[in-house]
Image 1 (cartoon, rainbow, N blue to C red):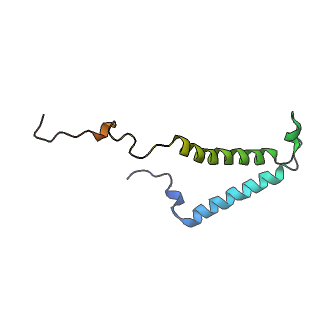
Image 2: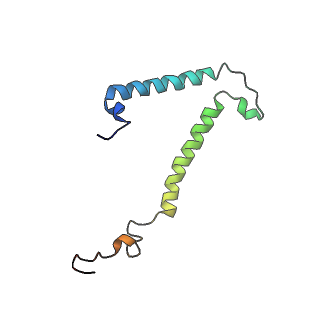
Image 3: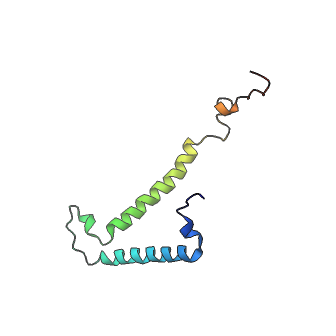
Length: 96
């Protein structure tokens, strides 16, 4: 039998518990940021939860930017149709 490390998440209750724990951890870190003294280099870093907001904005730009790049750089599905190695005809068993 092949080892599957994700078998733990097959039951919906376990996945829901892990997601709940993750959300509680995120909320605790968000609240903790209000009580931590910051030593900043730039003034904008002194805003509360600056790094979480900045990270979310940058993540969103990367995701939506990839959708734009898909239209700019994307190729049709059969772009390499005649040039691809797997498009060659295979010899029959009788031929050599």
